[in-house]
Length: 425
Image (cartoon, rainbow, N blue to C red):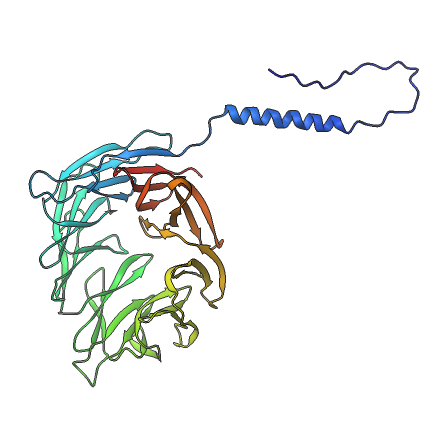
């Protein structure tokens, strides 16, 4: 133990002259030094926060998914032998490894595209060749017992239901409403050939869908009942022309034949509101109360949804990567990302070069990685509102192929193992 001399205090005699010595300026500094030293010693003695890392039992060719409070591992196709879907509990904040909850057998062949948690079920979506037929298998989230297996890709609805969209390789099929826990089909709407449905979302869940028929008729359906609410003829003069339709917020957007215009309809009345000259539109997304139309040739055109008037446009090579809270994340080829103001197109800041991770679940934070020192990977949250990147951690031995649901991070490592991190920064 080291001792710091603070000096000696004595009583002075009564006959001490009235004149006082000047106060020593060093004594408060010495006291401050004692405090700093004490804090340093206590800090060194206290346990430092560390990231928790757990190895997930998965082969090099398995696929792992984050979902709810679990990690799901799908074995690769197996022409011979057994194949499983295995559920592991994520470790607690206090530490510990992953714990196997259950294991369910799978068909030996077929590619699994997604595993997610919905309505107290684990939904695994697979696609079978030939024909590219999508199929959803539902497992009990607690026991892994298989509840049902039906054709189609799952879409949760705003009233706690489930839609399965079954579109075959010829473009026809059906849209089925099922009871989530039993798989019982409640109603079915046929999908004519080449009439791929578009969905109206409320808080990320479907409450209506739209079918565009080859005749030009657009039909709007209620997702709770399957009842057709209204329809409109968009091709009164030409029944053979190809066109496209998309739902954005409360607008029905139609790209007429020739792809040189964009026509906006009010979804509730199906009345045409405006026509905008925006050629070769690839797709449209809502962006901070406006419409961001992405041309096939690149760039961006931002429209007023009430009038169709172009507010601003950019003809450069930059690509729209994400929209958050009135800000656009723009990918600049070879130069990383920038944050643009959605209302004006003004460049707010540059965020540098990142590889965006797959985010588990809607609305999760944007997470990116890039190469750091000594082969490590820097992990950062891209905050568009604060217009900055926040370094979350620096991880060794990451091969890529990561999923994020902060504070959890699931990645495959260079040695072929799969690991789950609970990040602490």
